[in-house]
Every structure is written in structure tokens, then in C-alpha cells.
Length: 82
Image 1: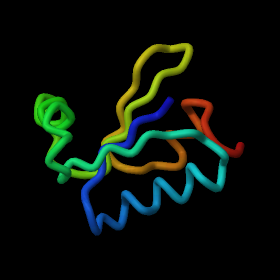
Image 2: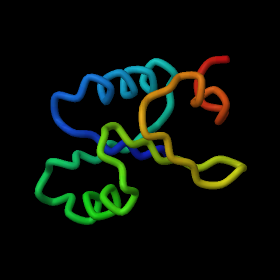
Image 3: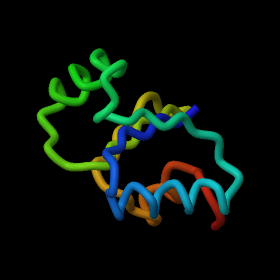
Image 4: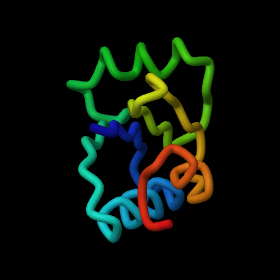
């Protein structure tokens, strides 16, 4: 399953969630601003990334991370419409 690390009022975060819903792709949203997501924030910081969304998933090639929503990249990873 795909995990999306988001922050409130993030336009790109909304775009990726819309794309995933339109393509019937299951995902788990992790709000980095929520107090209970301390471990998620630590993971996010460990990546050295300072932007949202961060999308993490897995396919036959192993784990992958996308730091900004990119429909072309999703298709390369075999997610979404072709």
C-alpha cells in the first residue's frame, strides 16, 4: 500500500490524493502536522526532504519514494492509467 505524508492546506497533497482515488489506488495518508504522528515526522526528517507530499510505496522493484506528485513517475511504477 502507498503511504502519503501530507501537511494541511497542501495543494500538491490534494492533487495526489485525487489522482489515487480516480485510479482506485489504495493509500494511507499520514498527516505530518498531527501530534500523534511523531514517528512519521522522524522518518520524514530522516529523508532530508523539506517538501510535501512524500509518497512511499513498493512494487516488484522494491521500495520507492517520490518527493512530489508526478503522474508520469506513477505510471513508470505501474500505478494508475496507462
